[in-house]
Length: 172
Image 1 (cartoon, rainbow, N blue to C red):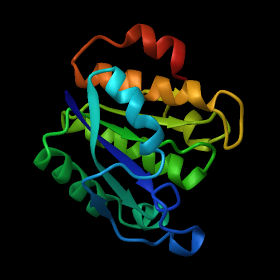
Image 2 (image 1 turned 135 degrees about the vertical axis):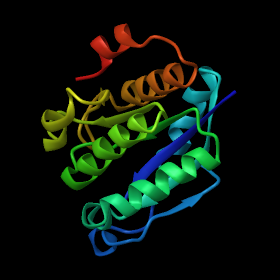
Image 3 (image 1 turned 90 degrees about the vertical axis):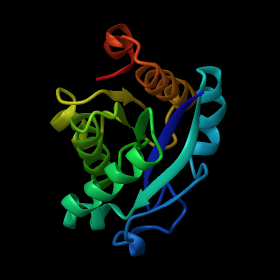
Image 4 (image 1 turned 45 degrees about the vertical axis):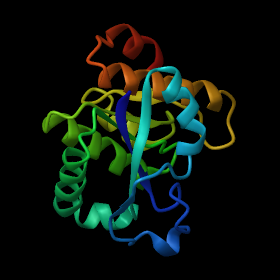
């Protein structure tokens, strides 16, 4: 069973809305927020979420180096096989955070994927630098399929499998 870490912003982690955008980084050895929905899909792909990292997206934007160092260190400590950053849907600050963290994890040798909608400005900015799984904006049609795709791609990367075909069809 491969070990997956989920990275969420303050909203997706259930830590409040914009008033908590400056929430310092934290983590729990459990699934949080959308991790509950993602867990069965990961299990279908011989993977499991072993921890959830979270941070206020504005805190991240103001302290990128610090948060990246903490999150990469945490992922190494927990021997993560892959990381899923998101789902960020259409939220711009979370999209920026998810894409940049996924790029950083990849640079440190930990396979990572981001997930967001086409409406997210980060999609256009980062789609050529990191795998970004397509998803609808909040309330849109196809959310369940995008969750299946997030788990599939992240698990394949965790297993060290080739993902070019999946990236062509389920990513931007």
